[in-house]
Amino acid sequence: MKLELVADYQCGCGEGPLWHPDEKCVYWLDLENGRMFRYDPANGRHEQVYRGETIGGFTIQDDGALLCFMAHGAIKAWRDGVLTTLVEEIPEERSTTFNDVIADPRGRVFCGTLPTKERLGRLYRLDVDGSLNVMAQGIGCSNGMGFSPERNTMYYTDSEVREVYRFDYDEETGELRNRRIFARLRAEEGLPDGMTVDAEGCI
Image (tube, rainbow, N blue to C red; front, top):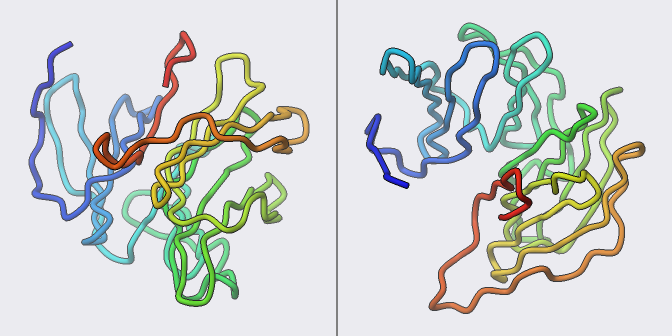
């Protein structure tokens, strides 16, 4: 495996690269500066496509729009430079922001929030009918998520305590059960952050 530099926008915090299957492009974020970029590997072109309110994570909808999870618990759809508000705010998340999200195989989105001065972060599940459910609480820094190839396990990262959790996941209902520690990193090993799960089930 060889790393190749394809774009350098000097991001304050580069986050969340995601492949857009319709456009055949990669989108990613600069979390600190409220920017989003796009890269086309077929021709090597890349560009900044958005600058504005901070986006903590995004998924891709069936119609190709990006579903953006933002500050104050806002959820907005982005298409061709235009943001459309779907959820104005989550009152309990007014003083914080979403950080890292993932769509499950049925179109639900698991979305985590950062802690506030009053309490620790949470993991929500946004269902396809627009309802939000709290799936986990007491999270130091909600981060990377992934599903096993068998779709019966979800992994979830709390960067603050350097732990990666493993849940039993029910694809039919979207429920998470039996949270336990999958990996705990020592300080010298670094901080667990983003995540992907490959076809062999390796993280």
